[in-house]
Length: 499
Image (cartoon, rainbow, N blue to C red; front, side, top):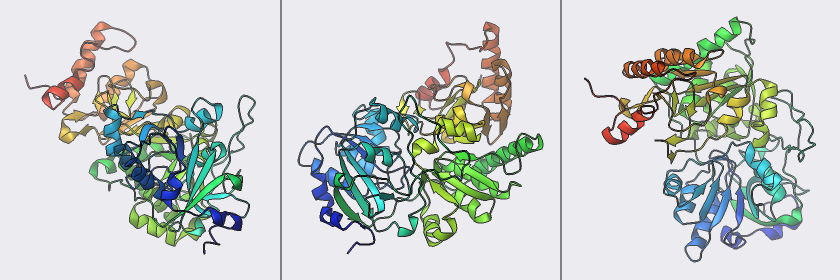
């Protein structure tokens, strides 16, 4: 019945329901699930595990590529299935459990999880649950819309469960390039010297005897939750494009630019969308996620090819992508995330990294994960992999949030994810601050005048002037440095009352 999807006849006897497969899990296990930013995630097993947890204790350490779709993270968290979670999430219900201390969340650079599993720094995977398009005649697992950490999970897991998703077309086969680095310390170089190169296989190799269950599903990925752009994101895009044009004019790169990376979310997607009106041609992407804007750029011809670990699209763009898959076959490569985000490759290719900040301070330190210094939002994701190792590291943000009650430019960030040493350019709708080659005392006035909202500039100028009186390489008034965040907690705004 599923001969085109399960091409090794002996594996037909492994077909079972998700409820039956859920019995293969035991309390306390470490589980690796496919899924990277709502794409290529297991659809049936999370629901089956939630149902099982209604009747008996089942607490798991859950490791994925990034966030899951279909509310799976939240449903499993609410049911008590998730005891420990890494390396990234974006679900509101799970976030509440993390911030209440009920779920232990380990926030990791996305390139690190596979390495820590390989070296034994993390507990070995007991069960791997992988969504697939098909299983080949030799047992190879063909992933669907993401690769993430799936290949590493399969390599290490004692038990492998494959979810064959009939909603994922067979035409996806061939998009993937599965390559895993050798063990350390005598590892050779990753033989990747351009973004479009293929260095691995199109399926995840596994001994068929380790496939314990095959579950059939027919459910599309959750659509992207990125919002449409607006006047502020259009302005941010304009500043970024003007900056890149200046880099071309200065001879630091050609009109095809260097390979682009863009983080997930509304602002990064909108900035890439803005490249449709730019003069750049024959661009390439070497990123972790392809969003709607990447497909638009491929369609326009301005983007020659794109390499990533996941494709996460709106419902409309997903339909367009699937309907025209043959057009993209030779222009898209999906890789394991430890390759898409690998510091060695990112530095070799000279990536232009574009990521989103929750807030940044007057010296260029960036907070991309914590609200109010203590409450996790989503996680650092892959931004650090690219920011530290790329040729250019840009962070973008709207200058204010909550209707102007919160300034995204503050005297001191309340949590540091990216230090000033890893940040080259900061951008808001008001302007762009190029921090390269500038000392802290030169950075602060530039960031205040170029990036801060006009309502907050007087406060920032006053803070910096007082800080200068105290001296120092990076002047601060420690008694006031986090007072803006404290004021917001008590008064509901960071703005100081008028004198």
